[in-house]
Amino acid sequence: MGHTHEDERPVAWTAMPPRAPVFDAAGGSVGTVEAVLGDVGRGIFHGLVVKRQTDGRPVEIPADDVSQITTERVRTSLTNADVAARPVYEGGVGGLEGILRKVGDKLETS
Image (tube, rainbow, N blue to C red):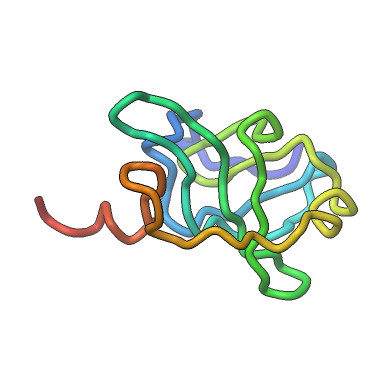
């Protein structure tokens, strides 16, 4: 189904590519990953903050609704309508200690 890159493979949420495109249950594009909600130290994945394609607003997609993360993209079990109906994410990016990791953080040298 569709075109896949030879090197596309499932990865852990901690290895998600920056600004990964997000696709809905039907395979349509719904936005891009803005931030990952999780605690890397404890290995707990809470979900994603996605910049919604329709209006550019950030919305949260809970971990339970993330069906696959690969080296190329993120797939969600939500439909386009589900994503459109999500409330705008009000949490700060970089709020709680260890909870939120900005996508750009991993580009910095340690």
